[in-house]
Image (cartoon, rainbow, N blue to C red):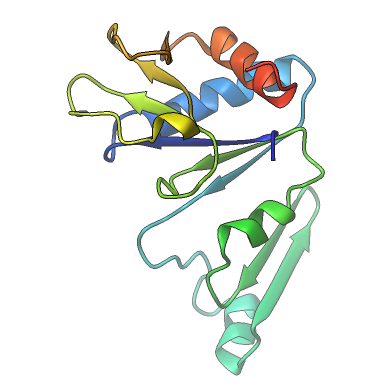
Length: 163
């Protein structure tokens, strides 16, 4: 799964989403297609009471799809495992996963000097660290977390098997 990159951090608010948004914009500017998967640790409810899709779910439908011009949403009444979700995006050049810090995916770890206390990713799963300060980690690249061009270069090299 060389096109799947997992972005993790030790805790909330270290900058994972900001990093991902910057990487997406950089990859898109180079002509790549990108899909994202975000793990949400709380109950997820995007449907609105009284709407038709809500009524379908209340009636017992396990899977509900709503589609309109320019957007489609699918509601599945169970949590999918990460591999199932990734399979929905296999047609993309890159899949960026936010969260799932215990997965065996290759990772970019976000280090925020105000919140982070350690690197949580096993070295064998770590592509690089995106940090707001210089860090010295044996044989691990540490990149400025705002250098989306360099981070995109690393992600592309990883996909090509160079990293």
